[in-house]
Length: 522
Picture (cartoon, rainbow, N blue to C red):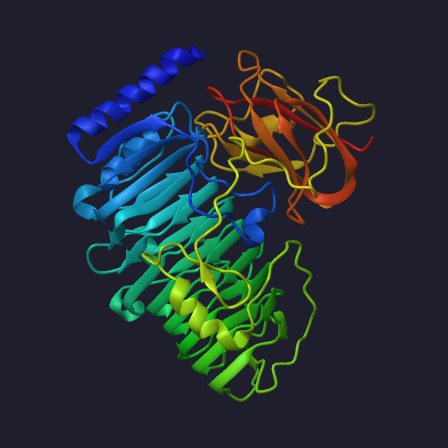
């Protein structure tokens, strides 16, 4: 049974008040607050990335206070801006429980939530030996923070050794003006600085420093984990990195205006069908800055306007296909968003003045000049679909004609609530249902062969009607949005041939429950 709004807000404020009393959190009045500047690159696609814009602003000085702020919201999708100041470490980061969060000790856990901004303020925010983990979440902004010396072995350990790690159906993340650093490679206990896996898409890393690590970061955990992609890296400094700057397995990556210094073994490693657009970067005192390395599963690249300054290349081999010394393109990559790259020659200077935490959030104007960020126009709680998103279909639950193609198909999705099953989405029985573990999540119908679909009906279980709020319907093969809207019901869209279709719940009240995920060709 859903609580009245007043009671939910009272419960949320009570949780925050308890945290404030314990120390480490300061409540401020609700206001239309957001990170400075606006998201860029692929984070602008799929409806955009606005984080906690429009929500309450909370100040936190401990990791426990960050968790308390998440857990004190009315729902897992209630927007919030968490301003962080001071040092976050294992000693001040504990699990906090609540219906709007899923946290853990020893890691900043952004799990099964949406619409959150974490931004460093005041004297700065340092996450010392403690990582930031984003899982089954969407519309997240992390800005102006330092994350350092996160270990996967030794002591203490956090986040599998990743400074920032994303996995399992993550969508729309903007990481901006951060400093991510380690003090060695795997033998010293460290892993990646910026990792994405298990269906993570629409991510931008901008104006950040990644340094002193064996591994810069990856997109895809193995040669079979190729459902990730649509990632932009721009105006970042990669310094003293052995490899993975980044490693791409499948998907599309766009790297422009980055400064690479002392890439020791390999840099941009495009593998397993990945396509990288590499333009106007400055590579300096480095080796094998672009190619396919350590595998025979080829990747591809389009290289334009880059500067090579003391770059060396290894000889081609069975598991080694460097792009140089001539850096010829092997594919073409179309970029769907507008951007204005600086000339490669000024990249070292403009990156030195803009990249990293504590730089005043300065950005490039596309003319090799650093300037303060442009303040974003406040948007709605849920990102407004971009111009390429189809108009939502009607919400009349009357099914279209024809056969329900979900019967006999397969199904999967994000973590499910106890006692529910993905199979209940397609059994034709309205008394059974699937429910996500939190207030957001996603479920899919899939077929062994390509199937044409033009409409979907989402039927909520008895007693939960009206719980589902904002949603997106996605072609899981291509990663494109077929429709988006609010509330369950019938959804129509242009005829599309695919093997897997995904319904994403971006916001809800109470516990959403889907009795049937019906699909039709007519």
